[in-house]
Amino acid sequence: MPPDVPVQRATVAMDAEVLVIGSGAGGATTASVLAEAGFDVLVVEEGEWVEQGSVVPFSLEQMDRQYRAGGVTVALGLPSIAYTEGRCAGGGTEVNSGLYWRPPGDVLERWRDQFQIVDFDPADLLAIADEVERDISVCTAPGAYSEPSEVLRRGADKLGWRNGEIPRWMSYPSADDAAGGQRQSMTRTYLPRAMRAGARLAVGCRVDRLVTRHGTAASALTTLADGSKGTITFRHVFVCGGAIQSPALLQRSGIHGHIGRSLAVHPTVKLAARFADSLNVPDDVPVHQVKEFAPHLSFGGSASNPGLVALTLLDQWPTFRNAITQWEQMSVYYAAITSEGLGKVRSVPHMKDPIVTYGLTWRDRALLRSGLARLALLMLEAGALEVYPSFKGAPSVRNRRDVATMQQAFSATKASVMTVHLCSTVPMGELEGRTGADSFGRVHGCTNIFVNDASLLPTAPGVNPQASVMAFAIRNARRFAATGGRRA
Amino acid sequence: MPQVPALPVVGSFAQRLLATDLPDLPTAKRNETVGFVAHRIDTLPSFTRFGVLVLGSVFRTLLAVPGGWTAVSVLMKLPLPLVAEYPRLIRSLSFAYVWEHWPSTTPTGAST
Image (cartoon, rainbow over all chains, first blue to last red):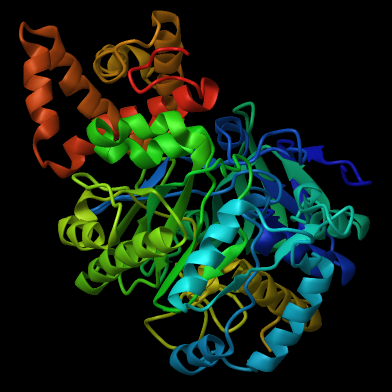
């Protein structure tokens, strides 16, 4: 369902009262609020508009068309951590699992107190979360759960571990058709809403840098999809490119301060589990998660098409390779941790992309080890015949004794560690030295440059951050609309 | 500035690695897979791409000398963090492509 207002191709010369850079969870909600408040809004997106259903979810084609660098992006470190970023209209909301977690109240209070976020009542943000949940149809799945999801529920129940279905932003055609659900991503919700209110969306437009003078930006230098150079003039700019691209753009624009110094992620390690019967669902993810050890440690299910099963077996291919013939009886699961490590995003002169680094702490490594062992145990309890942990030198796991052996053999340095939740590179608040933007996203030292995406979250929230991103973006945009962009 | 295409740099190593890991993969599929790997490397973020092509050049040079594959095999077994990432990247991209496109491929690469 394309929007009823046509998407534009970016041109070499554009202008707007408010420029929004990026069209994901932060940019789309920002544009919607500001357009409905009567501002002349232009949203620019580096990627293209890709209609839902035109690519198979979690496929290589989707990675080619909707992810940055085909999904092959990495934070360097020991180990390096693979991550992904959406690069299309709607951003990450078009390609992620659509699972929804509202921001935990205790986390919001901690952020307010530790980062000195002013005029911030967690109850107000949760009221915005209520609105978001209505707007994007957050609901549980109708009918029966998929078997990979049942595996998580069954294993956790046997161990007495807390677990449950995570709602998603989906609309379902009927009460028993979970497979026919359509994701209510930004291209289905906030972007069309913004455009109906007068916002313009221009795709195929990368912003290379903002031209600033004494903390005020008046134009952006761009590169269009065909390689031509362009300029956008504006009065105010909201940078909503996500936790990697937003700090990188600010740095390229000569804005430094506490920008890109505190990347936070939820590192994950994976395993594949083989069962007696077919259960593989190639194009969807389980809706159950296990939260017994949250917020430090959570378990869930990953996309499991045969290519991704092969990837999970790769680190120990010589001994695990025969399992690939039974990929239909296999599914991939992850253990995610709330990390105490820290990453950095650095722009380098004459390089188009930033360098991203991340360092795990010893506590993170221990948590990944125990997380993978507990996940393997859960799989055995759920009836797995054999479990294949994803690290070099891993033994396969068939019983509890093997779990102990596997735990001893694990080292994070030998593991395929990845993440999809990136945040905190321009943390918000008034605390000097630890925040890059004020309590409403205005970049410190700047007059008309705002950040309004995952970069603002002061730390990793311990849950999927997209709901937090949308709620904060709406809060901040409303404040901007109420004050006309002036300091309150 | 025009960028160096990845295929001439990584192609020979990717071919050899796939021939070793998946010896029964038909040549046409192997060529297609190597083409995909090179395409993906061409779209990597600039710094990562630079690093991959530097490592690719080292591996290509080693492969060009007699007994080069033995030296490369030893190199791949050493616990050298960044060096180890290179064959891992090639394998990851290749295996994801092979099993997504031909899911009935056997562990040696044969078609069933």
